[in-house]
Image (cartoon, rainbow, N blue to C red; front, side, top):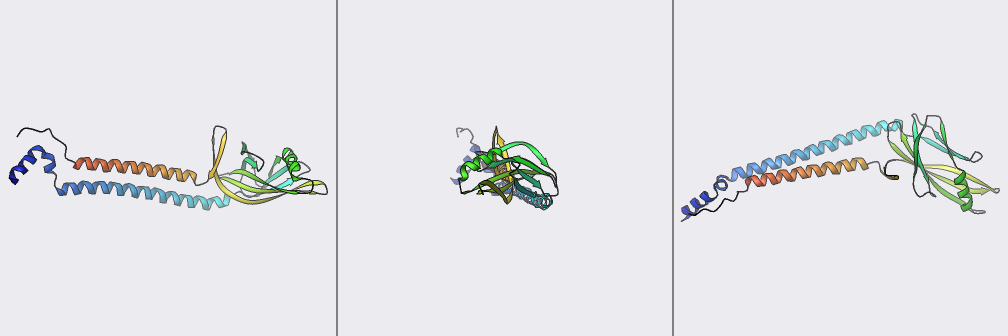
Amino acid sequence: MASNLLAELRNRFPRACSLDGGDTTRNRLQVVSLVVSLLALLATIILGYLQYSISRSSLALAYMPAIAVASQQDRHWLDVANQGKANIFLCGDRTSFDGGISFGPPAMIAPGVFYYIRTEDLEKEIAKRVGTAGALAISLELYLEDARGDRWRADNELRASLRAGSLAIDVQTISLKRVYWFSIGSTYFVASSMMPALLAAVVTLFIFTYIARKLAGRGKSEIRAPRSADTAP
């Protein structure tokens, strides 16, 4: 009885009966090997990028912007002086009164040279808000690009007060951070400097995951016995 049943199964599913445990294990090991190879390739790419980032960061220290901002109220402008070792480019600015960042054609500032920002409208706005005997703190963000293409944001604070009936503005630079900005139409967005690397890592991981699933599905289809048409005994 058992021998007749086995013979019937072999007649109906010849390919399924020809696959033994060794074939199934071998196919599974091939799929696992491919997945491990893809993961190893992804790890190599990530480590290579990290090493590149470390080398780039070390080199960036020599080109890191160093600026000094001073108020020249008699001339109604702010001086942005380049105290670093390489050219920098002033790309945009924003105060706490502005709704968005004002970007324009980059203005090059050579080492030891300054660039001035007109402040007539800003001083009028400050005078309206500071009151008769008060003080006011205004944030000033300067968006810079160095000679290597790295982008930075310099956070400054303008401290306005009335002194002997006249408006006085002092400037203090608080921090300098690497950032990344991009535009969609006429609207600009600022994000962390790691944004491009994170996007590249997510896309790469998605591609490798997709390939691994396709290979795993292909391996399963190879060890799955196809259905054959029933035949009369």
